[in-house]
Length: 153
Image (cartoon, rainbow, N blue to C red):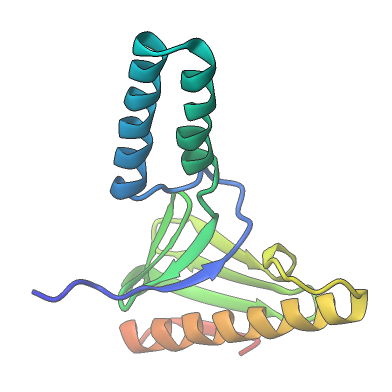
């Protein structure tokens, strides 16, 4: 079985950051080594080594992951086959995905980070990224369920 490929997009959601098992393992191992160094050597050496697990833990980025059958964003999982309505509001910069269980996921244009410094370029880059991600989501939802209602698409 081949591993599922996800499209990753930086997205500043409000949920907790999801850390990979490799990142968690590295942080735990480096923390143990730093504590061991504090005990065996001197306090300053171990204290400096405590920076490594701290950086490894805090440097995890907030992401939006698009898979072939579902979307992952923080603690939210949206299975494309369970979507009953997708509402795109381009003027407000929001894509609302409503599922059969009554839960909704809202993708917001302003939560996409950009490296631009000028306000016009920031707005343009965020709009471009939002359009790209929302079109991919709508395409995958259309493919997964035939009875979905698309509004504003």
